[in-house]
Amino acid sequence: MILMLLMSILIILISNILMILSMILSKKSFMDREKCSPFECGFDPKSSARIPFSLHFFLITVIFLIFDVEIALIFPIITIFYLVNLFSLMKIIFFFLFMLLIGLYHEWNQNMLNWSN
Image (cartoon, rainbow, N blue to C red):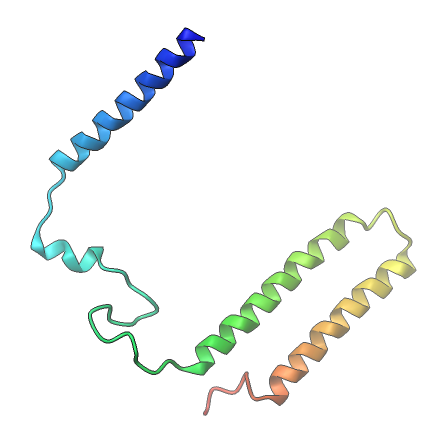
């Protein structure tokens, strides 16, 4: 028990010494200020945060997230391939792909995929 306590104190002491050393030895200059500023989607962080944002970027992000979640749902189908018979597996896969195509048709119908606007 005492050995674990001593090791914990030693680990905390070494980590604090290394953090203090890195703060002392680090070289900071005024030129590095731009590197340390946050970079968010190509917007200048020094300008106003209330600039208009294109809705197409948001819609493409939502479409990406939907397809990403759908891919995550396809992976378990591969693992249950040997547990179920082929007909029921094909029903699951076709239903899933049918739902994907309905979502894609809805996005196309609402002109979410059209960048000319």
